Length: 134
Image (cartoon, rainbow, N blue to C red):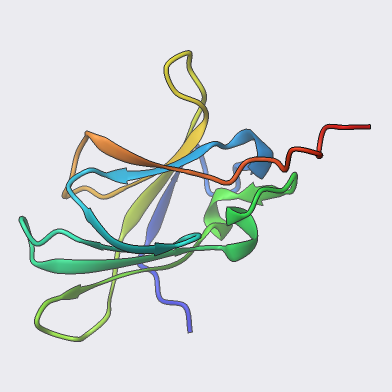
């Protein structure tokens, strides 16, 4: 059963973008990556709160495709454990679409009020080499 806290979405929950226009997924640099498999992440912030953070993105979104996705449909799980307590607690988050600039390609940024910049960026899979061939 999916478990996620309350999401805030910028520019809006119903904002839709083609997956093919997104190149990175970003989170707080304060979170240390423990494990990642495609769009499933486990972070810790032992330096601040002694938490383990679990984040799962929609599997069909992670792999490259030309489908459109609403921001509200991308986060499947967002919860944490306040160690040593094993209880899974819903994690409130903000998911923001960030348009590309000359310095950084378009990306999604998942943030929380307890943390601020800088961010760490994870590359999303790109189009297969033969996709654009006739």
